[in-house]
Image 1 (cartoon, each protein chain N blue to C red):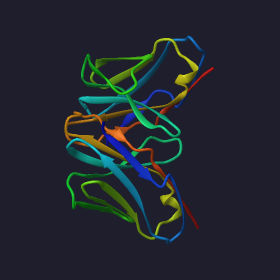
Image 2: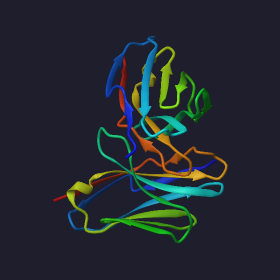
Image 3: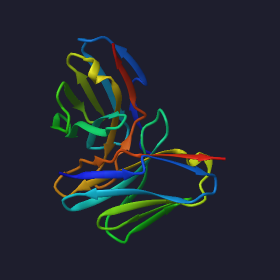
Image 4: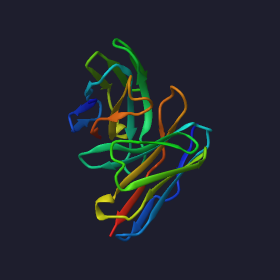
Amino acid sequence: DVKVTQSSRYLVKRTGEKVFLECVQDMDHENMFWYRQDPGLGLRLIYFSYDVKMKEKGDIPEGYSVSREKKERFSLILESASTNQTSMYLCASKQGGKPQHFGDGTRLSIL
Amino acid sequence: EDQVTQSPEALRLQEGESSSLNCSYTVSGLRGLFWYRQDPGKGPEFLFTLYSAGEEKEKERLKATLTKKESFLHITAPKPEDSATYLCAVQAGNAGNMLTFGGGTRLMVKP
């Protein structure tokens, strides 16, 4: 079974802080994704990566950046956290034509 | 622009009362339609992929079907443990590995 692990289940940060969300997958998948999930808005793609050091913007990249230095790890960075970035963040990975597999999410609160 | 609309937003059923969830989509060249189940506080769990109109997939009490405009998730004789949010997502021909998600249907099955 594919295992996608997100480093924190819950995180509380302050406005203006730089925040790092980490995601690790154990199946050597090429593709990794970061989404945020908000009530009434569904899952929205922030960034994805199709290989080490490669990244593409999703639908809502503003205020975020990503890093993929190793194949198994994909990091989401909030450069200067704001209250409107309070959300559930979900990481996913996939290989080829197979479906995306998700981690259990990080619930991030920005105070 | 690719769009996915799920209905109803919420559905309450009695145990054993069969019903269907709807996923309507507009996409440029469908490559795949995906159904996921999401429990509270967890990430989405993959259920089915459908690729072409007329295709059907089954798993226990769930059956997914696909037409050129919509997909249905039929739930036969549901049990309380089927209570969850069900998400539908599409992969368009020109979208690479990106998925567009619907808003989900929250299913509650009462004993």
